[in-house]
Length: 439
Image 1: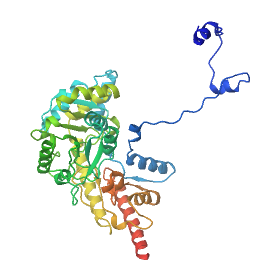
Image 2: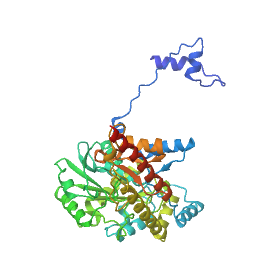
Image 3: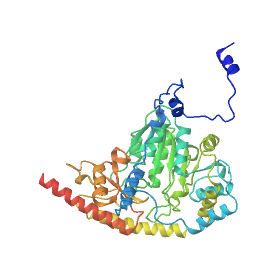
Image 4: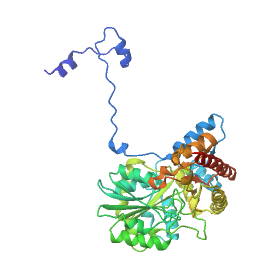
């Protein structure tokens, strides 16, 4: 008879009032022979260690802590429209809740929303059908799914630098190597030549973002055509993040998409969402348009990761796409006014130069002339603006090596806070220039 069998046969039955007790209780029992169990050695997987955070949330957390301590902080660090979600969108979500849209939905999204998204994409000139649309809890989730579905360990993936820090993070998580490409120097526009010089036989995926975070740079149709030719010649898959596509400030109503170009539909994942255009950041609603050959596998990822997106949120998304766009038009006009004020104010600060952004929600001024000494880099400059002047902005270095020497400042904030931000930068710039002259 084995010791296990013997123990199971000879052990006395538990008393009815016997209860489990903790390790601490057991150890404290004088007659107990139980030995203390050592704490587990922390072991975090390499794939999770490969992930990095997003500086905006860290800076905003610090700004909120200062505000909780009684300081009046102007937060110009996060890309969140200060407009409310349009009322008809809110009402659609509430109505769906009252009507019982609180149960599981299909992992790929409810049919009315997928139909509305496909129609929206077709209006942009993209060949889209509802069966190729997958709804996700925010655009970030679709970026993650695309990376996991397309990238093999050892693949090189081209990412913009400066660029959204989540791109290299998810590439590393998927086992790939992020390879940075820079943008056109004078206006941060997409430059096909910069992409071409980074392509090697190991290059598998190209990530695009236009309008661009953090600079507000855009991409012309002509430049996208050159990039599309590169993608087809080198058999690259393309992930195009178009979350800021509605936020352009010239005569166009919408930024062009590489997915609308001939031959690109079968090799492009379009990522978009509702956070920026419809001021729905907290609703967490995004989507992707995928090539037909990729849909089933990404639906499986969605099943494993999210089950579904809350159906009442999806009904709100239907209302956003099918209802009036007056709120979007008004928000875009307000953002244009604030953009112009921010760019003009920064241009008047000695030592600061700023390209007027063509899209998105950010200015990306060059502050290299202010750096040196006690303020050696953009992180130090941003920290002093927050701690000494109660203005929260992001250092350009949070967006890659090519972002060093810049600040990212959102104009999706009140005109009052934008004016405070410019005044703070001017005041700190004056101090830094005086210090440089003294040294």
